[in-house]
Length: 153
Image (spheres, rainbow, N blue to C red):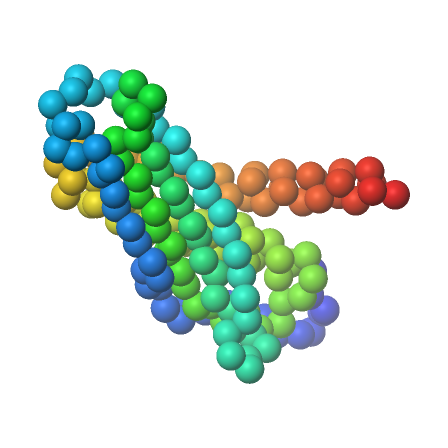
C-alpha cells in the first residue's frame, strides 16, 4: 500500500488502438469449406512510462486470435489496444497490480469489440471473446516469477 497521508489518484487519459491486423490467408477457398473452427487466443501486456513523466504510463494489451479449420488458419486477428494512465502516489506492488491487472481490464472491452468487428467484416460468424480475469492472470504471473526466482538460487 502507499504511505499513509500521501494522496493517490488514478486517471484514464486516453484509450486508443495502437496496431491492428486482420488476415485471411486462404481466401477465397476458406469460404467454401464447412465451418468447424478452433479458436486460439493469446494475450500479453506491457507497460512503459510516457515521455519524461514519472506518473504517466502507457499500458498495451496485445491480443492474437487465430481461427483454424481442419488444421489450416482461416483468419488471424492481431490487435494492440493501448491506454495512457496517470497514477500518482502508487508504488511497488500496488502500482504493478494497477498497471498489470486493472488497466488491462479497462482495455479489454475495447479490444474485444475490435476483434468482433474485424471478424464480422471478414464475413465470418460473430466472435465474442469471453471475459478475462486479469487479476487472476496477474497473480499467476507473480507466482510463476517467484517460483522461477526460487529455482534460480
